[in-house]
Amino acid sequence: MTEFLDLIMFAALMAAVLSGFPVSFSIAGVAIGFAYLGWTLGVMDISLLGALGQRAFGLIGNQVFIAIPVFVLMGAILEKSRIAEELLDTMGRSFGQLRGGLGISVVLVGALMAASTGIVGATVVAMGMIALPTMLRAGYDPALSAGIVCTAGTLGQIIPPSTLLIILADVMSNAYQQAQYTQGKFSVEALSVGQFFAAAMLPGLLLVVLYLLYILIRGVLRPQDMPAAAIKLARPDVREVMAAIAPPVLLIVAVLGAILGGIATPTEAASVGAIGALLMAGRKIGINPRLILVGTAALVILGILAGIFPVRLQRSDNGTLEWMIGAFYALLALVGIGAVILALRASIRTRTIHDALNSTLTMTTMIFATILAAGFFSLVFIGLGGEERVAHLLENLPGGANSALLFVMIFVFVLGFFLDFVEISVIVLPLVAPSLIVMGHDPIWLGVLLAINLQTSFLTPPFGFSLFYLRAAAPKEITTGHIYRGVVPFIGLQAIGILLVWAVPSLATWLPEVLF
Image 1 (cartoon, rainbow, N blue to C red):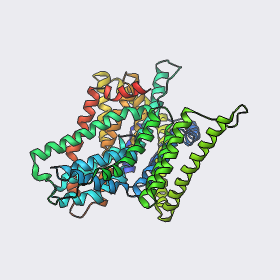
Image 2: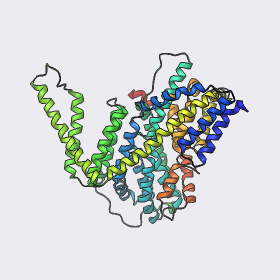
Image 3: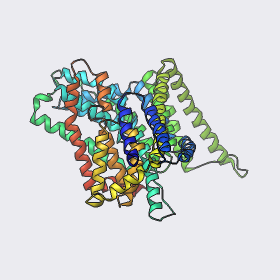
Image 4: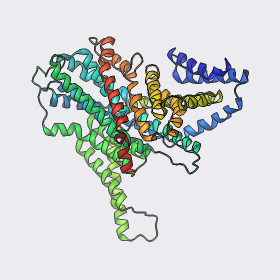
């Protein structure tokens, strides 16, 4: 019995999570119970728990994870300021006259919101409240409509910046270093968040293309499921389209461009994104667009010029030219800060910033509490011999490295029916990833495959988070059965996406190799 205590511990975790008790407390409670059970039975050295303090300190001081709350804040500001509504309305009127046009609009807006917010819940709820009633009024099949909204909302997990990719970058970097130590390499390499952001770009766009192709093909084969809009919608002009699309696109370019170009760390780029989101919210709330535009332009020009012509005013050998440039930079900074203050005042007056901060604190607390509890769980699991069992299992599977990877992918997919992506990322992946890397799998390619797999966990019944989000926001005509049936084809498309990335590894590895 004692030799299987690690397996019993994992089964107890499943039961605790499914009980509905708060996840972080469930994980920590199971860890405490089995730590003392293992100590009592003499199969675990309780002194191993002395490393728990170091793990907690490492989490708090982790430079990678600092980016998570700032990215969440950026997305929350965009969501609370209803920028998604403007995007959906504009894109819907642009494509509404096409068969499947509303579905195309939802997927494209989902991709844009994914790259600018990265928050699945916010995107699914927003599109469920805005797009879903419009699709139903247009005569769309209810199950298909629900499936499109759910799936488009989950793109925030694979298209950077996303919290999943940030967590995965840390997990895979640690696993890669551990694998190098196992192979006898003591001059180890680390992996960065930027590399994973770059690696996920093409696979994320590939999924968008697969969704769009499915909608177009289904529109041809089953036109009754996605009729063109019966009511003549007022098509937006070019100026209206640009006003809706340009700000999110510029924000995406600023954030991802800074990270992928090596100009800024993810945390610094996230800060830029949060300020950009605040300025966008100010324009939406009612601040004069020209003031916002001037302030934004001042900050952009300042960032570019300061990078090309840096000036250090504390140097004693500065001449008149340096002081003039410094004064110009200060003027640009004051103009930009003025626009930020105006946007902040407006968001405080309308309580947009209050709601965004509340949402940010709630989500960040959940993520960090789960990561901390998972660190406790993995310590106990390792102490009970679980890590050796997992490594032995993977190494002895028939078929070698590919067979081991297939087993892990299926196991993660099944876990996605019951667990959240954070729990799988910080509990399961640290146990299996080092062995897979030692077997010869590229860590960045492996991380992207797992990211697409974990994205699918938002869609798989019965506990897919996107399903719950949509259930809460959907009109009464949409039943739970509609939602479950609607996501099935898109789960199949996710599987096709995984197979394509598996068959063509360069989809995930080419861009990181070029940029880094």
